[in-house]
Image 1 (spheres, rainbow, N blue to C red):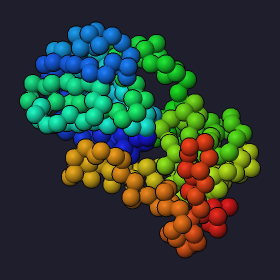
Image 2: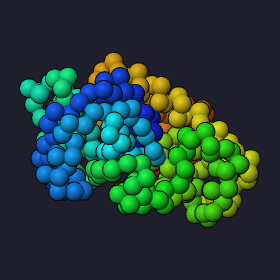
Image 3: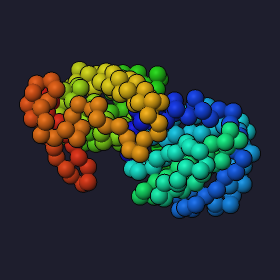
Length: 272
């Protein structure tokens, strides 16, 4: 699933290319992902001109100069193509937008789990996007101070990794980066939130900011140099999907536990 560094990479990539580009033609090829009739989607976007792409939690927002927004939650396997119209379409391409700059923007999704919405303006988002109003603050928002971060986490009593990835608590953290944040802060992923001191939660807040900034810079640079990836970059991560390897901090073997189709990696020695 794309997380903040991945989505920020997409955002930077698209903002170097999309603003000012006009949609000359829109076409939906797999309607199930687009949450409105395909003819209505195509008619609504034809003639629209892109503004600056934004991100909120795990959603990418594509505003148009008219005030309309296209909102995409890519879920596990949603990916993008920005390519020559003659380029081969990826399997399970959901929609394409032909642009007047001679390029096509395409969205493809192997498992068809993603969701694509249209809203007429910003104020319509809570009505147009299910659970939008329930979403917690974006974890990288300047308005999410350490004090407010702690307040939000303290509303939940479960395991800290589950709390971190709960969108109603804070938005934007998924499975992979939760492992990285908890490793950075030295916190065991299965510790209950109520067992953690304010000092530990403060360290976690610091880890959120430092890890996301560090990883986002890496992903942005690679995406610009290499183009839009077929899969998300994960080789720069220190512990996630590194089960059996040595911990970069203490050298102990990194543990890997799979539960509920979710892999968790951590160091038993330096994550207390």
